[in-house]
Structures are given as C-alpha cells and as structure tokens.
Amino acid sequence: MHDWALPNECRTPVLDPAVTLVPVRPLLDRIRQAITARHYSRRTERAYTAWVRRYLAFHRGRAALEMGSAEVTQFLTGLAVRGHVSASTQNQALSALIFLYREVFGRPLEGLDAVRAKSSVRLPVVLSRSEVAAVLQRLQGMPRLMSALMYGAGLRLLECARLRVKDVDFDRGEITVRDGKGRKDRMTLLPSTLPPPLTAYLQRVRRLYEADRLEGAGHVALPDALDRKYPRASSEWAWQWIFPASRGYLDPATSQRRRHHLHETVLQRAFRDAVRAAGITKAATCHTLRHSFATHLLDSGYDIRTIQELLGHSDVATTMVYTHVLNRGGRGVRSPLDQP
Image (cartoon, rainbow, N blue to C red; front, side, top):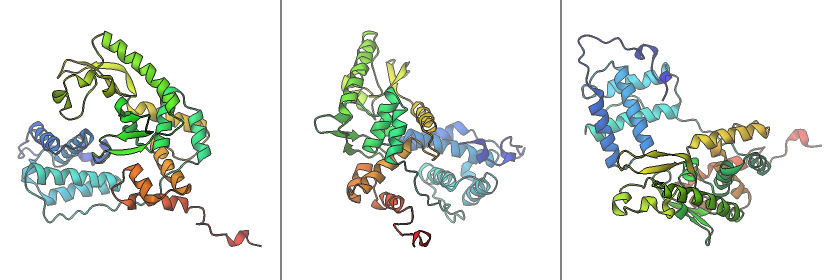
C-alpha cells in the first residue's frame, strides 16, 4: 500500500476535538485473529490491516463500529477520484472492509453504493522461446535454476521460492506445489533437463544444511501446527528449503536458529537485469515465465484442461486467456495489404 492511496488531507489528519479517538491496535488484533481462524495468508493479513488503518485515518479516527456503508462508500470514492488507484486496488480495499464488518463485527454492510470496480481485461505478456532462452543465458546460479523451474513447470514466483526438498520427485519427474494460490496443492512436471543441475545444486544446499546443524541451527519454519505434531521435522533434510536464504535468523517463539527461503526480490532483480541485458523491450517479469509456459504448451498442441491442471486454475476460463495470446498477430488472417 502507498501513501497515494489516501487523499492529501488525510495524510496528516486534522482531528475534530469532539471526536473521541479509538485505539487502533485492539481492532487490528481482532482482524488478525479472524484471518488466522480462517487460514488466510499472511499477505492477506497485512493487506487487510493496512486498508483498515487507511479507512480509519480517512475518517479521522472515528470508531469503525460507528460507521457503515455510507462511510465505506465515501472512502472508496476518495481512493478512485483522488488517489487514482487501479480497479484491483480499489477492490482489495472493499474486500478488506467487507471482511471487517461481516467477519469481525458480525454486521454485514447493506445498501453499499460503491460497487466493485470493473477490472481491465489485459492479455498477459509472453516471451517467445528464443527470448526465454536469451534471458536464461544471462542468469547464473540460483536465479537461473529458479527461472528455469518457473518456465519449465509453470510455477509462480513464491511457489518456486517455497519449494522444499521433499516436494521434488526425481523418479516420477513431478513437482508437488504445496499451499499454492488459494491454499491449493497441485502436481506439475519436472522438466527432464533439470534433474542433473538440480541434483548438483542440492548437494551444495545439503552441505550448507549440515554446516548449520553442526552449529546448532538447520531449522526451518513449518506450515500450520506441524512443528507441534512433528517436533523434529523442522530440522530434517526433507523439510529444508530448496532455495534457502543466505542468512539465518533466530525465531523468538521457539528460540530456534532458522533459515528462511530466498526472498522473492532477489530473483526479481536478477530477472529484470537479465531481460534488460537481453535487449528485450517487453514489460517482462518473473510471472511472465509462467505465462510463457502456458502459451508454449498450447502452441505445442496440448489441451486446455491439462494446462489448467498444471497451472492450478480453478476455472478453465482463467486458462482460456492464453488462447487469445496465440490469436494475436491477425488471428491468422492475411492482410489485404499483403495480397497481390
């Protein structure tokens, strides 16, 4: 979230002396508890609590329970008119406030004048096969291997960063994506060209892990309550991150010395530099590799349902956007300018 999401006059609010300010922290704690109880992601928690903060700041510290649909509409209108936020940003703010009133207060918003903003329908940016090769050639080490996995298996950036040793089955040529978008698991393929470099890379990671263990470290965070169910799992090799961070940290809750997985910004910077070095003018990001994976599979003749399963889309309509990408360039029609 950014400051531009607020009208200028709300960045330093001038408070009405008649308004009694309500402490924000207890409300945010209630939101976090409600989000945790529903097993929403940490990113959702950060986004929702940030929007509630902005909502309260917009209304100069009034108690959220004293407000309702009219104040929510006013806030969202300010975002669109003064903040010039995108449709997706406005819709995220609306979702956060709907969650606040419905799930935290038990008082659904009624008569809400502000409707969800209509999002723009945009075709994804896709690299050609030669462009993908050019980018990969300009990457080295861990960023190259991660980029190859994202393109070769259709992984999202965080799905790739969060891979654990046990998630890769070399014998079956499969990768298990755990807790992907929408908290869904799925299976995808392990490209046949990657086992040799991935095996060699994991040998180096294993040496790092063993060195950590000798120093009393070598732990990783586990999902949900698995650390209580399997107390030793956090230090087992199978649960280690395939792409660990270069530095460890001390977990205050367990006093364990752990490593997090590589932060996504490391790969994002390396990929951006590689795209620039390759002379590619497309607005390509790490996620472009996933788009390219789907488009190139369609171009090779694979059916849309298979690609849907590999990508983990709940609705085939989401996957169908790649058919529009293939239709670009005149939909196969010959221009009259090119005809004799």
